[in-house]
Image (cartoon, rainbow, N blue to C red):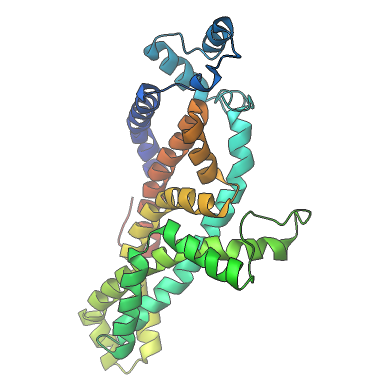
Length: 320
């Protein structure tokens, strides 16, 4: 297993380089410049020229890329490895590390909630195929899967925060209650629900289809013929094999949660990486945009690796 993981990480090096080149080219070739906001009548041309020189924007793009890429991977030891934000001059690494816990909290909670709901719902649909319960759940799944996260988030805010005043409207904590766990949980409910609704709608459909396929296998019929109860047949014989496609979905969903969190965090003003990335794009804050993009790319690579590793855990027939 260790040899397989090391081999996969080595194979990921060209992918990382490709992500870096494409991301850098898109960001720096986009029309406009982070210096444009300083081009006012109050700022002299000499000051503009100094800013361009300080940020290295006067160098050729290949030179800028090599400088950025070679410094980027020294971030564990160098707080300025990811450069400085064009907006406030703070080290990008410190800004990312400061926002990462909030995003991990939001993504982790929504992931756990989605799994705890989607797997039982999918099993219920498979066991009660074509029943009224299956049809009703399928209808709600279709509606939930079709809902844009930004629209659902706004609807939840309007109903539960503005009209009913049950839950906080935005943020991670109420002012003056930093560190208050019940207050943080109250702030988590709406953004987690926004992310979980779409995830549960998709995952439960996958779980239903996978469980239906497994329930038709000969070994399941044999287990039933031996007199085993439905709970034991499903829990011990069918569920483990039915989870294999869900493992694939889990590895692919982890990176997509970051993109979903970007929209959800913006809607709920949740102080995480997604909201930071959206603000950076609007401000043309190149170092921050590149750092967030690289983190997203690394999550895709690690998510796929995690899915492959979990295959061996779920299915003992798979060896690496």
